[in-house]
Structure formats: C-alpha cells, structure tokens
Length: 232
Image 1 (cartoon, rainbow, N blue to C red):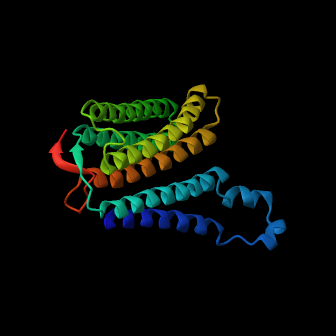
Image 2: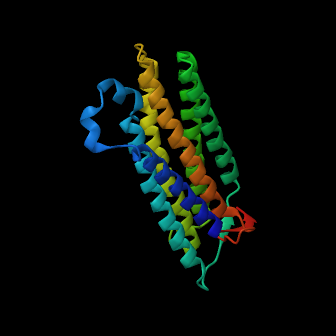
Image 3: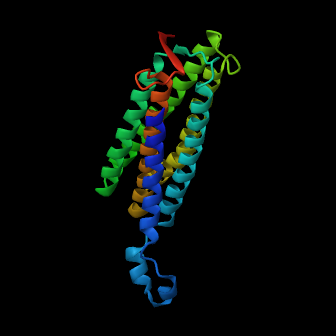
C-alpha cells in the first residue's frame, strides 16, 4: 500500500516540478521587453502546461482513492475477492498501446505521415481492446455474483477500474482529434506532432497509474488484498 502511495506521490511531485520549471524563469515585469520571436522560441505550448496541470489534479484524485482504500483495508470485516486472470492480459494490451504511441511520436518527429497514421490507429485499437477487456472482467465478476455492493473489496475494484477507464475514455477524445488531424493532412506537421506528443504523455501517465492500481488489485507480496490468490 505504502509503495503505491509513494509512487503516485512521486508522480505528482514530478508533475509539480515540471510545472514549476516552466515558470521559474518567467519575469512578468519584463514581459513587454520580450520580442514576439523570442516568445515563439522559448515559450512552452499552453496545451502542454494545461495537460500537466490536469495530470497533477488527476494524480491527487487517485491518491485520495488509494488513501481511502488503505484506511478501509484495516477494518476486520475486509474480505478479498477472486483475482480475474484477464487483468494481466489487459495490462499487456495497455502496455502495447503505450509502445505504439511512443513509436508514433518518433514517426511524427521524422514527419512520416503514413507511419503516424498507422501508429495512431494501432494505439486506438489496443486502447479500445483494453477497455473491452476491462468491461469483460466486469461481466465475469457480475456473472460470478460479485457486485458493487457485495463487499468493500468489490466496491474498490469497481471504483478503481471505473475511474481509470473514464480517464482512458477522455484520452480517446484527444486521440480521435489527433487521428483526424493526421488523416486530414494539409501540411500542418507541427500541430500534428504536438497533438501526438500530448497523447503520448497522457498514455504513459495512464499506463503508470494502471500499474499502481494493478498492484493494488492483485499483488499480495506488498500487503495488498483487494483480490485473493484464488483466480476467477
């Protein structure tokens, strides 16, 4: 449990550090002396800063949920649920989506339009596959009689997977816009590269958070107990 909290806290610390690094050299009282050319060279895209602010807020949300889980876990009536085997496959699929997105970033930096299109499509297919796998896990649990109100463990399982799934859906909205821009073409390679880089940052963040949640769900070695060792 402590490991998960420390990991997410460090992740949030990195986000805050990155944001602070963007503003440490800003001198508002000298803003009028900066030429438009200098601004164009040195300034970070506002979309990147907005994304990192959002990731900081999202990390705070996950830390609060995990803290609530840590407090609830200490009560005597806690009973773990069976471990869905499909979670491991879903994790591998999300890892594949992250790899595909990183490959897309390299293709965008080399201005390889066709490779960017293929990379975005592969990322989308794998991400939708991850969501479909998560929904199938829910169907398995419901079919086995493990509902949201069955126990505290099942409630936290559905909460963690639902919140993470909503963040994945939010990322797919940005992915759809980036994919539309990549397929539309028009020679605006810089904006396409920025869109792909933003998506890649978000996908890597989703993967990092899911690794923490996956550890909370299935690992007994670090004292976590949402799922028991018996597979579903």
